[in-house]
Image (cartoon, rainbow, N blue to C red; front, side, top):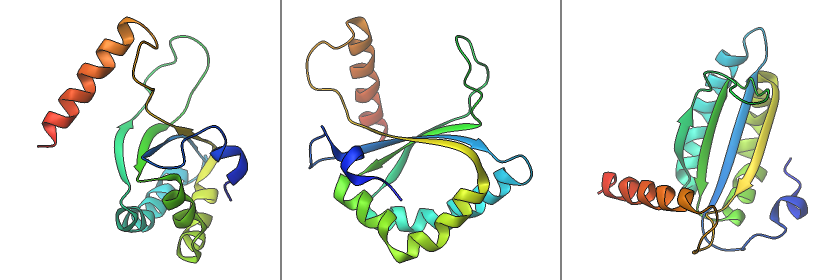
Length: 138
C-alpha cells in the first residue's frame, strides 16, 4: 500500500499528479506477469481519468548505474483519485500480480514545476515540448 502521509506531504492537494514508475522485472516471467497486471489495471486507470503520458525503455546507463527495464509516467487527475483507485478492493486484487512481476520498483510522485526559471535553458525546452504535446492532442 502507498504511505499517504509521506507521498502527499509538500504537494498541492488538487490538480494533476504525475507518478513516475521505474521497473526492474523479476528474472523468471516478470515481464509477462507485469503485462497481465497492466492489462487488468488499465481499465481501472481509464475509469479514474488517469493516462500513461510517457513510456520509455532505458537503453544504456551513461552516468551512474540504473539498469531498469521500463520507465513510464502516469498522469492522475488528483492525488485523491490515485489513492482511491489503488486503495480499492478491485485494484488490491490485481496488485498481487505487480508484486510478483517485479524484483524492484520505484514509484515517485511528481508535479509540474511552478512557472518561472527552474533550470535555465532546460525550462525553455520543457515548455516547447509541452506545447508540442498539446498541439499533438488536438
